[in-house]
Length: 195
Image 1 (cartoon, helix red, strand yellow):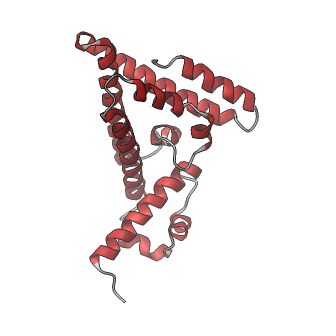
Image 2 (tube, rainbow, N blue to C red):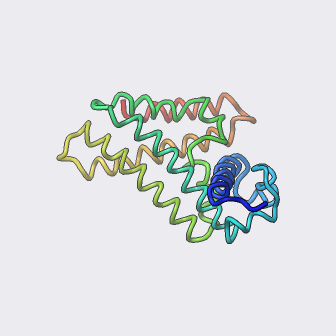
Image 3 (tube, rainbow, N blue to C red):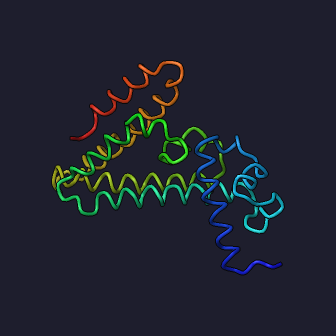
């Protein structure tokens, strides 16, 4: 039985969503195409009906993960005139709950250790995602410091993103061996965030 175009598009989206989750959980190189397709509920042979290569899927899954995160961030900040919701969101980013959620967590952190070993398409997708985060962070910092400090807002945005991602990754790296150290790293990172 042949699939309709609509069914094929739905299947493709399911594969991308599954890949975004599984790549964050196990790493890009930790998942084979066969394992990924099985996880999505399809056969290995069907993969090439949707993607030319695993690298193409990696880029699509990364793009989807960044889009989902950006959508949540924009929803959070759209009605936030004084930056309070933004500040709360930053604090939540460095929470034990986010640290422990590798499957649905931030793609900036999840893919950081691997993106330098991936191809140009994945690196480009990652760079676009980082730029989008920085634009939102920069606009939030501009709210606090006014329009006269544009360069400072950009630098602060980079500083905030580096603190978030770095603190989260360090906390994840040690949580099983030393939970107290992991919590200490998260707390120190939160103290450095804008209020």
